[in-house]
Image (cartoon, rainbow, N blue to C red; front, top):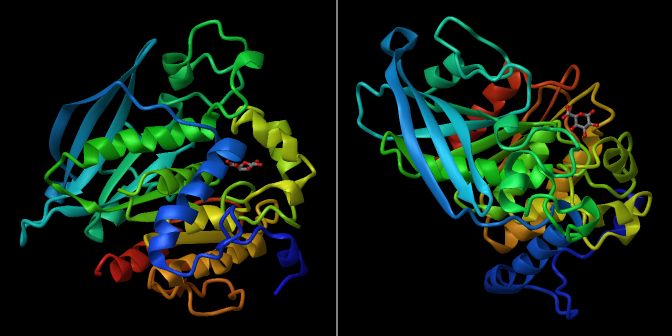
Length: 373
Ligand code: GTR
């Protein structure tokens, strides 16, 4: 396939040199090892919240009666204070059936925070009406409400709620969580709420992220097995794309431009991809046998579509161990030709780095097929 494959860590080989050949050994031995490697070397270690509470601040009819708009405040506490994540939800009013709705949750990293979106507004990045029309609840929270996207020495946002005030940057453990891990933690707090809402089917929640949000969605899905489907759009470096031999953004680039996103340990791998004990296909494999969808855009060479696709292919052995066949094709597809396999899906869209309504329809086509297990 690719000559960089020779330098990849072996997905199925345990630290003690034994090859995993059964689902039970994958679940008990190899999967926890890989998760721990990502915590230590890439994203950092997340804390447990001390408490999480929900307040439904609004519930009213929208979209000509097709949906109920809910605004929920999710309040969490840590040793040094509390934080609030506002969540917006449009839940389809299933007239003909009382079945709870499956959910698409967007981790929003755009300027528009959508929290006052009403039925008139439509936006390709979060096409709430199109999502509701297809029978899914549309949910969104903004990353800034968990942790602002800036390097402030880990004082603002959720870091300041869990780490002693005044801790100098240099005294933080080298595997302390970065901002991507903080956002993923926020997605789990939202999942805490979704789990309690009887209008929703908590067993069919897809978490979607674009770019830095796509990196976040994958890490959230690896940590939190309540997410049934993970969608990573144009996530590139330290998202879906294999780091070894990657074109465009490298580990050095990402750590230099966004020094707050990952654990301090990750900086050791600047220009030393081959020394990393993991690569990103191993992140995808942590989600097995749940659904993973990766999408790329033809002009998004900084993210490197080929490397994003390669990760999915290389995660397949873990899926096979857990009785899910995966993509079922080996070649990189043409644009606008989605591959919707069992549990693994991919498409390449013509155009630039962005999240468009076309992408959403592909995600929902894949969910229509894969949520019916
Ligand atoms: C890019 C960055 C990527 C990606 C993206 C985004 O400039 O290099 O890693 O996260 O921004 O979030 O839009």
